[in-house]
Amino acid sequence: MELIYHTPETKNNYSNFDKSIIKIVDNENIKIACPYIGISYLKEAIISKCKDFQLITDINALFYSLRNKDDINSTLSFIEENKNKIRHYSNLHSKAIISNKQALFGSSNFTYSGINRNNELSVLINEPDKVKELSNWFDSWWQFSAEINIEELKKKIKSYKPKQDSTSSNELFIANNNIINCIYNKQKKSKKESYEVDEDFLKNVVLKHYNDKEWLLSFCSLAKHILTKFNISNDNNRLCITCCGGRYQIAITIGQRYIIYPLEKKEPTIDLIMPLDFDKDNAKKQGLYKTTYFTNHTHPEAAWCKYTTTSGSFSLNTKTITEWETAVEKELYRTKNNSGYRYAHQPILYSFIMDEKFRNRILNEVYNRKKEIQ
Image (tube, rainbow, N blue to C red):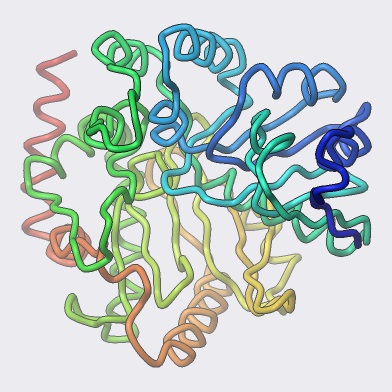
């Protein structure tokens, strides 16, 4: 481990941050998390030297920081050219650059000012276990970050007024959450402020993002099973049901951890929290695709398993259900107080899962409308 910083004596020399980044990126696959990016710096100092890259940034913060049309246009062009390598996560504050061998993280954004001018402090690590942990951290957030809708972004940019000074009001990218494929971006300033998902909004989510009615019903059946099994009510403060991850999917959290996360796409998947000792042979039969872990101070406490499912109606076998129940029960036990995400809980989503009559009415209206559109 090495501390990276500037001193008055090194002010006019080559940046210590630059030197470290060059070592990290040289002919490596790079993972970058940073809200404020200098596109020129990114291209010249990082992308030109690495094999390939992935970037998680905050699109709202990034464009809000730009001061002229040239910067906006060059940033937009860069995102468009690399749209499969860049994702958005609102309120991202981490700054890290990670290779297979080393990683740098700290206060510095990857801009010319952040690297060469500001008084910043970062840590360079090359311990394999710590580098691997950071790489896994990035992969987890990549999974829950949003793909960027380029066409919507272009539409908003046409009316965008660049930031003029530090006191100017600019709500464009904050207020218009449809710039990216995300229902809402956690852009509220206070966790006490709740998001409002009404019935029309719910219908719109189902209309646009759940093409397979039977698959959605299968997810609701699983979700209802677990909520009923442990008698988890709508007003249980350990519970949060919300549309999250930038993909309009209805996910459930207990305490600080997801317990189920569905993703309907070309190859639909369902993510479940599982015990560390889950039956891996059974999981493979169930369609296990990938396993990551929930950790506490680097110690794994639960597995996070992604299963591929069939299109249409799907089910989990008894062994998988039992193991899932065990992991959920543990999360309920360890969550003594409120979920940190309770502010984002949507009661209407609870009703959609638990109230069959309400759910059927919503689905009938939505899928009848789909037929009319088609």
